[in-house]
Image (cartoon, rainbow, N blue to C red; front, side, top):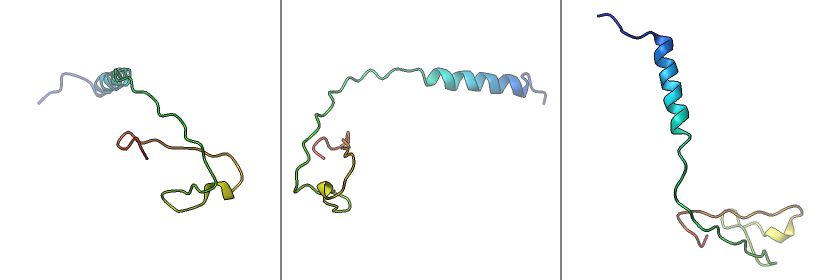
Length: 69
């Protein structure tokens, strides 16, 4: 059995297909959740750390599956 295409040609085609697949734009426009103020009683839902007891910048994560989390 003889191959019609060389390995470098197949790799080039595969690379181009993957590159073009990455160019697809997401058509879903979702509104971003607004940041919530961090108060003295707030704690991390994962580890229980009281957020305001530690210095430095604070951040918030929003999950698509649970917009209230």
